[in-house]
Image 1 (cartoon, rainbow, N blue to C red):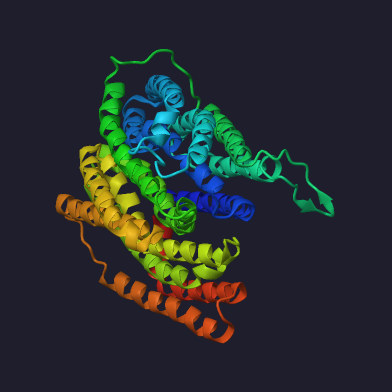
Image 2: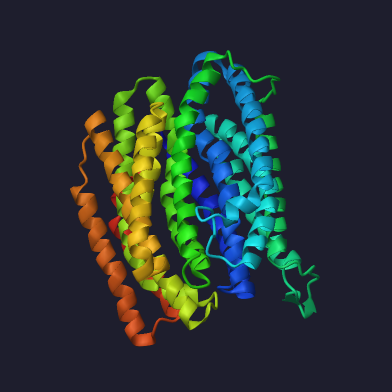
Length: 506
């Protein structure tokens, strides 16, 4: 099982690279637009295209489709697996293209209605959202095709090209930020870079270019694994029918998850200008550690858990889950304390202004409280899909979405954007706890985590104490934050060595 450690480190490396590029892109965007109505419109315009991508191929396919492809490859060979892949690819491409056209035609109604995306925006802002959303749908179609290709590669235990695709997507976005959006070009070696001055429209066109690169980079991997495209939809093929039966509840699951983001922006549009952007940037700061811990590990574990299920290796399945639980606890708990303590100087770099900085800092801090819950959720959901159980994640997602909406309605007025973030943390952490409890009852694996939890809490205390001491000497400046972060990471690694060894042995 050492391939899990190797693949996790590879995926984590490329995810880290993607986050660096993503941060560079968001940094430049923030310096250009700040917490402005234009940037609010840009962020809100991503909602429905993101929903479509996550429903059709981004989230629905990866978790629901990979176990079936893995099972087909193990029992019938790679050629049969690629045939199943082709049939599902053809069907989902047709659905994505059709829904993209429908969303584009009814964009105005979807944006402006009281239950729509941004009913609290001005008419001018709403028009920008409509235009940007229609452009985004082009990128959604390209991303969906890329997401389908990624599922095929990951079912063959191939992870690095899909991970590189994310970086290329951000490079396209960076091109839009630097060359398409600004009114004035950036200075480089004393010369001004050429720019088209398209504003937020340039940002979207850059992401469409990134989506194209995201798709194209997967093609060499498909060739390497001898992909052969098959014409047709295969609705009489048992593996295709099984895939669709698993994907139907997964689609509903992703619908509930994405509804939280739509509800979030609906409520935030009724707050002060910049609230949607504050949530977007708070989520950005949170997603860096969550992606490196939860998403990277969960992505790599899914095919392995599916193989263990297909071979009925119950003991290996249990051990994989227990080890992943320990790794996440040991890494996430100290990072929560460290990142909450050092986040302000990082946010200050984005130059949101004093009031904007305060909103983003507290929103990010609240989101970071959910790092453990979200990371555990990444693995727990995949554990159920590896067993071809899509109903349990669906029911838990429905409850989570309802809890989020109720909590947001209670918290968003008194606490603003941070209140919406807090609703997210409570709802999704509760979902993670529920799913792990169900896994425990189902599998009865040993939760021998007392030592791991004790060391994680000790590391968290040290990670919180170091910035407090350094900032009392040199204030909360970036150099002191970097120093505090480095010292905190040393403490984390020292106390989490047993779990790091576990990860390396997977």
